[in-house]
Length: 347
Image (cartoon, rainbow, N blue to C red; front, side, top):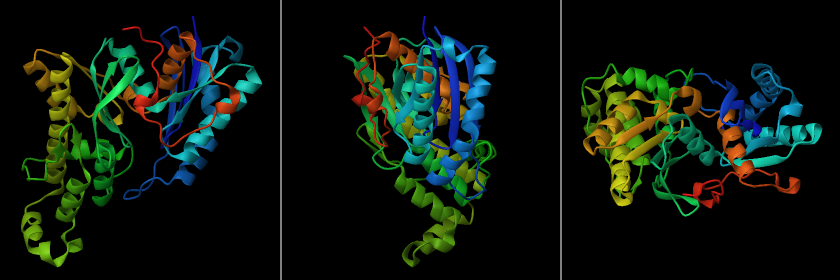
């Protein structure tokens, strides 16, 4: 039986989770929220994390009803992510490891999402659609690695949604993507947008540029102004949000279905913050049903970045014999899913 504490702080959320032999004991989280129309800068985000992380550690221990001596391992997000926020989690994890005399493990953020999703849903060997503010990947497990079948070639799907929310000056509370989802429910008119699928990869930057121009025609170059102004004359914000979701989610469904066909899989697991989107879940569910497959999705407690996913993935690593020398407890902004040797799976 392994009792693990995990710290996640790769972006604007800082979370601490505790899990013991698969049982969730604590999962606490805070979000750095900026004014409407603004994103979150790395140094300001790190400052927020520094101000709340110690209280979160104490809160998690209290919620779990355990003492530091009951822990077997301390885990933290090693990457990918923004360097200053990542460092906050790593430094606190290193300090706790020394203070409490516990082993330390660095966990890949993407692997944390995948293993948390598998644990909560019971999915065995699904095609994984990993969609968040920093990542967009279609993944399948094979021979001790999570293999990336397709991914974005520019910005992530969550980044596309967040940046468009800033153009519309939508609130960042609870999240820009959530507020786009709610506004999209009021949309009724579909507006044609670029649909960019290149083999198994997708591209969102051109779609974002196009829809930003529709939302604010005054920023268009003169050569495109007339066309875009004509489109924008009937483009309401709700219709733009609706059209953006329908287009980019259709792209994600297409490449996920192609991966299912290639691997002969009948399961799909959606993980990452954008995976909370109900419209994406519905569209993916329709595709799975038509193929005789099954969709696995999780709610915002486990979908959005959280410390529990790092604790769980770290516990799986620890049980399989993974150990990390203290001098290797650094962070890295670039840490791909397929770089990790999956020692805890035998299938």
